[in-house]
Image (cartoon, rainbow, N blue to C red; front, side, top):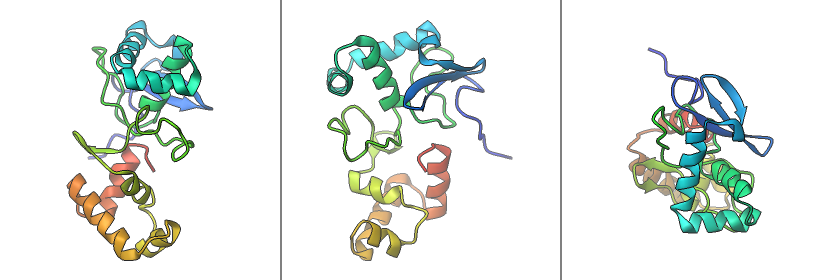
Length: 184
């Protein structure tokens, strides 16, 4: 049995992703400009943004008060990773916001409000430092320690906590999990 390696949206539902800093929409009919997504998709995103006042305010900090720009930014920050899980199902239900590998991580004034941390199980998120370690999973612990200017034992402790949160036993399983979700 082979795992699904197709982007979400090609099999069912739809997938939002970012291309050249612009949100795009992918479904079984192909890639479209974000604003050409089906009306129910745009309505679901708008409803989700408006139902979260802190997130909507974060979008306003990023792009100003223009409603179209806020919705584009919301889509990019909450659903902009291209991965194998559709962001919206065929019934118009949005998935849980996903971790989006953004070049502004660490420098964004609304990080953690306008975007998601890595959720490893329903309601269980990695901390910021665990996320930094997690994204370096392909490296040996001693290299990660040097890159993050930490003690190697501290890195090993973070890995223990990450594996416990994820319910996984090895770095290989973590690499597989992160690759499937487009995180690494």
